[in-house]
Image (cartoon, rainbow, N blue to C red):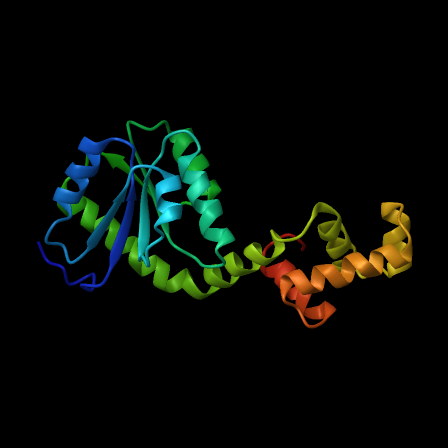
Length: 205
């Protein structure tokens, strides 16, 4: 099998609680130029987070969505590919909406898997910069408390501290404090930068 689509340093994170399936997938990808990092659980992945090209995640329970959320929280973008045996079409749609870049039906032949992962890699190169910025922005916004996010929404809407305070039933001085904390947590030097981050994170229009 050719490994021309992937560099020798390319690492694929494989998350699957089934040891036999992990072994079978690792075997199929052996000699492909990919380095497979197998993990049994998301918790294990979090403890030993590698530098990776993409993540191949068995779609069971909320595992796939959890991986997408963790990646976003790290302020970086890692293409996530879901897979399952005989998934319902609605399940595939849910996975894509949750943030998966692609979805594979297991079992799959080695050639088919390599072709699909190569396409994901190319798509990642195309979408990479925008997704990285969006993931980084979401990571910053997720540091905020609920009230700080409400203040951010008001600021993005062009409201003054007084108007934000009226909407949230708090004083303008309290709004100022939340606003300062918001900027600090987001690493923003001024309000316009915070608004740009919020737009990139898709939390405001």
